[in-house]
Each structure stands twice: as C-alpha cells, then as structure tokens.
Length: 416
Image (tube, rainbow, N blue to C red):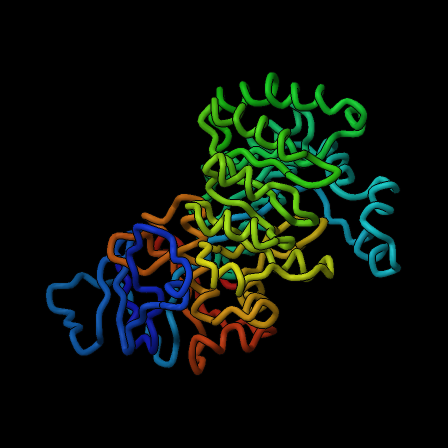
C-alpha cells in the first residue's frame, strides 16, 4: 500500500483525540490546522502538521496530492441506517404526495410490512449485492463508518438472513460496520393480536441464534405508540443484554414514547430520532452518557417537525447526526445533506454539525478510538473537498457535490 502525502491543505479540520463525546458549547469547537499536510502510511494517519514544518527528508512517500485551496476533514460516521433492504418504496412516496397518511398506507399493505414481504422473497445473495452497491455509493459521498440494522425480516429466518448479509458486508468492506438487531421493528401481521407471542419469538428463538453466530453488536427496539411500549422495549433490551448486545433505541419519533427514559435507564449507547421531546426527556438525556442521534432527513422526507437540536445542545446533551437510510422514511444515505439540513433547519453551526456527524457519530457506534477525527494512529478515513471558501460552504452549498476525493483506510474511493 503506497504512502501518501496530502500537502498544501487550506484547512485540516477535526484534528482531535477525544475520550468523551462532545456536548454543549464544546460541540462548536472544531480544531483546525491551516496550510497543513497529512501523511498516510498503510491505512493510518501517520503524521500531520504545518506546511512550514514539512520536510520530506527520510520520508518514504510514494504519492503526493496537492490540496491547494481544499479542505480535509474526517470521513462521516453514519450511526443509524437500514441499508439492507430488498426494494424501494417510491409508490408510497406518491401516495403520501396524494395525501394518504402513514396509517392509510399501512392499511393498504405498505410501510415496514411492505419491506418485510419483499425481503422475504429476496435471496441472501440478492440482498448482499444490493447492499454492497449502496455501501459503495455512501462511501463515495464520504461515509467511512456505518451502522446497519436488521428489522425488515420479522421472522427468525429473515432476521438472521439480514444479519448474515451485514456480516458479509463487514467481511468484505473497508468501512467500519456495526450490526444492530432490530427484530422489534413492528409486529408481523400474524402477531398483531398476540404481541406476547412475537416478543417470545424474539427472546427465545432469534436472540440465541444471533448470539451463537455473533451476528450483532447492538439490539434496537422501535419504542413508539402503536409499536413497542416502553415496558416491552425494556424487556426486549434486557433479554438482548443477557447475550452481550448493547441497546440503541428508536425513541420519541412520533410521540413522547418513554423511549428516552428507557434508553438512559439501560445505559443505551444511543437513543435515536427525538423529533418529539419535552423538557423532562431533554433533561433526562442531558444527565446521561447516552448519545442522542438526530435524523433530520427522516423529518424532512416525512414533513415532520425537526428535532430540537438547539435546545438539546444548550441543555448539554451529547448529539450525533445520521441518515436513517431506509426505503420508507429516508431513502438517502447522503451525510452531506444531513449536515446541510442540520444547519439550515435545526440551526446548528457548521462546526457543530460536522462534529456531530464525525466524532460524535463515532461515539454513537463505539468506533471513536479509530474513526471520527484527524489524529495520528487513527484510520486514514478522510474527505478531501474541491477548492471551496471554507467549512461553512459545505452546508451552505447544499445542492452541490463539493467532495473531490474520499480515502477509506488510506485508499482512494472511486468518485460517483
């Protein structure tokens, strides 16, 4: 693997080693070096510094990249996705435009159950090939670490099939990939009137196989009115924790579901969505080590109120940003759009959004020691922009692709 020097970097952003996630006023602090260089050796960042101090004597450099006028920042860490699915759902998108509600679409056989039916008919190889293509696309958009959930299986066979696909992606891809078991995404049709039987299926039939094959890092539950109650969420998470799976929860998307309180109680790695928050839920999250992960593209696509990012930050919550990439409510894995929406619609500063999408995203899937910032010894997962005026230009020019090159593990990713 060639050793690469990136020189004349206008701004090298995100230069930091963090032992704890950023919160409150710290989130707006994005350490930077001006007129900088960065050296990649094998797959790691070997050296960074000012161009004034660069000496190539005794350095074994194979390739040089001139970054005059360009910025370099850490690759995105997308800590909440549903990237493995069998088919898109643009027909439901049209139904929503025509005025149908989520409930009406679900009554027609749409929603999560629609994706579950399509996934049931797909082979593992078909799912893998589609997911692999999506993974290449998000890598070219700057994502270097990603979490992927199951949850469109809703049966022992199909949940395991999804998680095996994720495991194959982990084995083949150079991205850092974390796997989350989301069997408790919704109730399958045959269990609509017998919730207890499905919970028993998750606990007694799914979890032992998942643990035996080491198919997941985390367990997730859609804690929401009409889906899984706070009590059911806690019960399912505790069962997963017995097998070493840490909780990462869907919480407070549509209602004050109690998901935040359950997540904090169980010391969840993160509670995600948070469109619906009151002072009590915010204070609970602020007083914990649990990350609050915001998914603004889901709110955008569903025309829902955006998450109260400013209130969360000002109260001292640790927050991350992620795409929620899925076929029903956020059919985009573009973290650049997430960062832009966070600034435009949630009034986050560019530095806050970049930190939330990089180092805090890394904390939200426990890869902060190797990913999420520019630091010697970390993986060389970096974004090289085109020549642009400065960091604020990235979310400002929200419709443009301002990425010139992405490096994952020190290797250039083929641009889109």
